[in-house]
Amino acid sequence: MAAIPPITDAPSQAAPSLPLEAFSEADLLAQAQAGDHRAFAQLYSLHKKRIYSLCMRMVGNAAEAEDMTQEAFLQLHRKISTFRGESAFSTWLHRLAINVVLMQLRKKGLSLISMDEAMEPDPKGNSGRGFGARDTTLAGSIDRLALERAVGNLPAGYRLVFVLHDIEGYEHHEIASMLDCSVGNSKSQLHKARLSLREALHSLPRQEARP
Amino acid sequence: MTEEANPVTCHEFQAQLPEMIGSGESLAAHAHLLHCALCRTLLADLETIAEAARLIFPIVEPPDNLWKQIESAIKKEKAAIEPDEGKE
Ligand SMILES: [Zn+2]
Image (cartoon, rainbow over all chains, first blue to last red; front, side, top):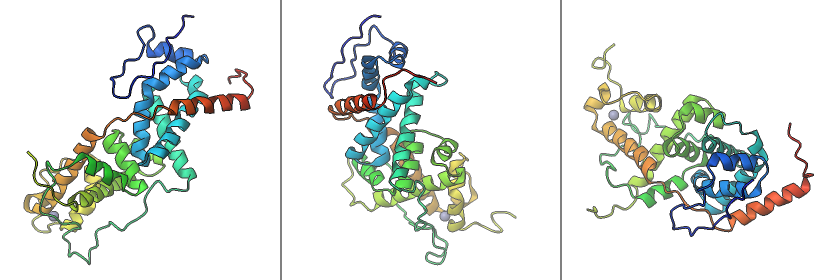
C-alpha cells in the first residue's frame, strides 16, 4: 500500500490545497475504513470546515461547536466501517453530525421543539391585523452580522429548524424525522423562526442606506 | 363561499401561512394579498430572510488544535476498548 502524504496544516486563510493528487476521497475512505489513521486524518481535513460550520450554526457558539465537532468525528471513527456508500459520504457525514448535535442537545435536556407559543398572533390584542404589523420592508437592508446574531439569539428549537431548512437546505419531512416531530410542526417552527428574525432585524437601529 | 363575500382577515391569513409557505404554494395571487399591503410586506420580508440565510452564512474553519483533541480522544477510546478489529 502506498504511503499517504503527510497531513499539511494549511493556514486557515488559504484555499483548500490538500495533498490529494494521489488519493481520491473514495481511496481515503476505503483506507480509513481499513483502520488507516492517516487516511482518517485526511478525511477530517477535507470535511472539518463544513462540519464545524454546521455545528456553529446549530448551537450558536464556538466552544460548544468544537465539542460537537469532536463528538461527530469520534462517532465517524466508530461508525466509518458501517458506511456502505448508499449516499455520498459527505451527505452521510453531514447527517451523522446533525444527529450527534441533536443527541447532545437532548442530553442537556433541551427541548428541540420550542413549545413557546408567545409569538402566536393574539386575536384580541390586535383586532385581526396580525402581529408585528410593519409597513416597511427589510429588502436589501439585511446585514450579515445582524442576521447571524439574530439567528444566534433564537430559541434553540426555532434555530434548529431555521438552520436545517433555510441554511442547510433540508426538507420539512427530513427535519421532522430528525427532530422527531410532525411535518406541520416543522413548518410552524420555521415560520416562527423567520417571524422572530424579522422582528429582531426590524428593531435594529436603522443604518444610513448604503450604496 | 368567495373571498369577496367572506374575506379572510390578516389574522386568518397569517394563521395559514406556515402551511402555505411550507408546502411551496405560490402565494402571489392569493386574494388576501391583493388588497393587504401589510401582509405583502410581511411575506416579502420572510422571503428576504430565507434568501439571505441561503447566501450569507459563512463556512468557518475550526481552531487548529481541534484535530489534536480528536486524535487524543480516539486514542483514549482505542485504549479503553481492546484493539481487536471485531466487526459484526
Ligand atoms: Zn393582511
